[in-house]
Image 1: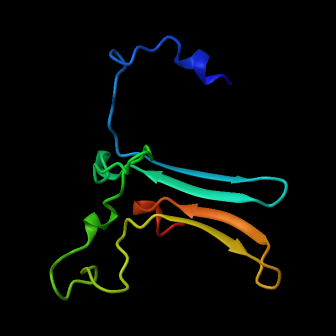
Image 2: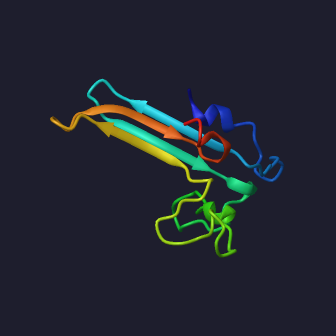
Length: 114
């Protein structure tokens, strides 16, 4: 794979830019037991619209589905997690600290099944 050859025919001024509500989960483990559990989410097609300088990704607005009405089960408050919580994670073996698994749930409607 050579990025230069893939990008050679694309003119930035004519490239189509499409926003969409996409979430991507990536999990990788190498033969030495190093792992990465990564989720990039563009919830509602834009996230917050804030890009940290030099990072190339937007910050999230995952608290969007909290309810502000007191007494509602999903009312925002301490130690509450909204339905759209994304969960990249890793599990280790308690006795040794070695990696057991890399896992992730992309949030939203997948969260209860995850």
